[in-house]
Image: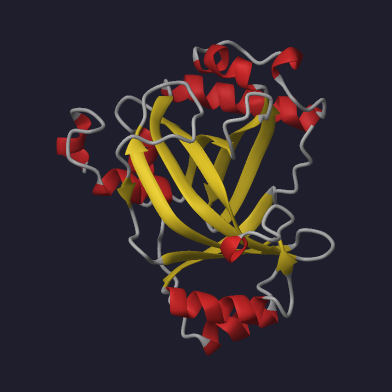
Length: 254
């Protein structure tokens, strides 16, 4: 079983920055945080992240975001490699006003097909015996069936992550080389056929905290003149893709 240290509920601020600013942010952040355990010794302290996003046939979850709904959610399967014995993570990411919450359950890869066909999760499908994992998988299935969700998009990027030595009250991530392409298959492969580079050579900086905005984060934002903005990897990837790539809805809503 993989130990999951993800923040279950948090505030999240996003910025799109240059590599020059990213280097300065790293030097500032390392005074307070340490590299994520998966990033130690890696180039740019980064490791690959892949997500298979689900949406309704008419892309309701995408449209909820671009229409600015305060209460919305996303469905995605997150994974990090092609190892058939490594679990994937069924995630429901919800936004309620300014708060982000995440349900996340570890699932065996052999169960992906059945679960995305609408089968309810069973204990044998899960790679984690914690009751929270079953709750997350059940909620994923419930919401997927509610919107008739199906695979829509494969998003990949390299993540640099900084965390406290103890606990997970704060987290700073910088994501590079964000790639996106349509994907309509119930599979979790790291291979991409013809991806679009969504943000070019820019870096997506995310400041995540579970309580109040830390004073040192505020100092960093002011010191580097950071400007908060939207940077949704799934949504921006869909918007930048060739019209029609996700179906007839695109001409009406994109």
